[in-house]
Image (cartoon, rainbow, N blue to C red):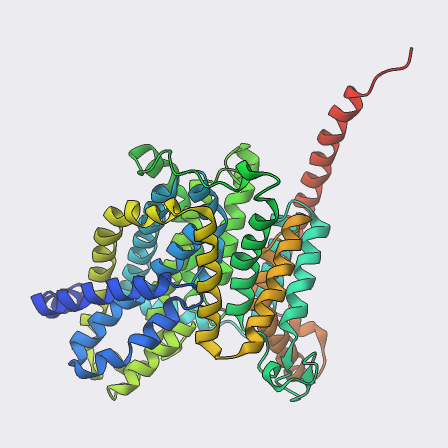
Length: 512
C-alpha cells in the first residue's frame, strides 16, 4: 500500500495554513468565474492561471485544485439558476436542475449538485490514487473505430431512446450536425457552409450555441408568454428549500450511477464530460419513465440532476489521473492544466511520479481537500445563491440577456457571434414552441466533429474497408447494446401511443 503512505505525505505538504488559504481562494474564485454565463470552468482556470505564477509550485497546484472543482460547480450553478450552463459539461444538469429552481427548490437543487460533485469527485480521485495504472490501460484500447462507435451510440441514445418522440429527436440531431459542419474541413482544408465569411472558418463556438439555445431561447420563450400566460412564466420562490435525509436517500443511487458513467470517460478523449453526463441523464429519464415518476420533466427530478452532476465531476477526477499518468489532456480544462505544469518545467507522463513525486502527491491530496472545502462553502451558500431568483422577472431575464451577450463577446470579441447568438436563440425559441428536444442538438454539436474525424481516420487506416467499424469487441458491443435499446424504445413508444389513443376512443360518443 505504497499509495497510502505517499498520499499521507502529500496531505502533510498540503495541510498547512497558507496552502489551505490558497485552495479556499481558488474554490471561491473558480466558482465565481464559473457562474458567469459564457465563461465556465475552463475559462476560470485560464483567467486565473497568471495569478499562480508568483507562487511556489506546491501552493500553485493546490490553488488550481480549488479552481478546478470550483469552476465545475460554478458551471452547474449558472445552469440551475439561470438555465445558462457555464460549460457544455453542465448542460445535462440544467434540464432538471432549472425545473427544480423554477418550482421553488433552487437551494435543494444546488445542494444536490454540490453533494453530487463531492461524491463523484471523491470516488474518481480515490480511483486515480489506487488504480491509475490499471485505469489508464482502458484509454489505450480505444482507436478511431471505437471513438466513432461511441459517438454513434451517444447520438442515437440521446435522440431516439431518450427523446419522447423519435422523429423530433432525430430532427434535433440533424440541426446539431448541421451547425457542427460549419467551418474548415480538417483533412481537406475546404471551407464548408461559411457563406464566404472568414469569421466562420473556425466554426460556430459551442459557447454561442449553448448560450443561444438554452439562455436566449428561454428568454424569447418567456417573453412570448409573459402577457398571454403570466402564471406559466413565474418562478416560485417558496417551497422545500433544503435537502433532507429522505432526499439524500433518493439521490444516492443516482449519484453512484452517475459516478459509474463518468469515471471511465475521464481517461479517454471522447469530448470531455458531455457524453457521460448525457448518458447518465438519459438513464435516469428511462428509469423515471419505468417508475412513472411525475416529477421528471415537469417540476424537476432530484435524480435527474444528481446523476449528471456526479458524472461530470467523476470525469474531471479521472481526467486528472490521465493527465498526470499519460500526459493526455482529455478536456479543455485539463489541457490548460497541462500548460500550467509545463510552465513550471514539468511534463506529465509516466516519469512524472518518479521525477516530481512530492509535488504530484501533494496535488492529489489537494484535490481531496478542494472537494471538502467546496462542499463546506457551497452547502450553506445554496440558499444565498437561490436568492437570485427573487429578482423581478423582467430584471432577471434582462440581466440574463446582457450577461449572455457579454460572455459571448468576451470569449471571441466578434460582433458576428452576437448575431449568431440571436439567430440560434430564435431557433431555440422555435424548438420550444414545437416541443423539439434540445439535448440532441447539443450532443451533436459537441461530438459531431469528433465522429466525422474518427470515421475518416478509421477508413483511411483500412483503405476504405467498412469492416473496420465493427472489427473489435468494443464496437460490436456498443452497436449491439444500441440496437437492443432502439428496439426496446420503439416498443415502448408504440405502447405509449396506443395508451394515449385508447382513452380518446373511449371518450368518443357511441352512435345509437
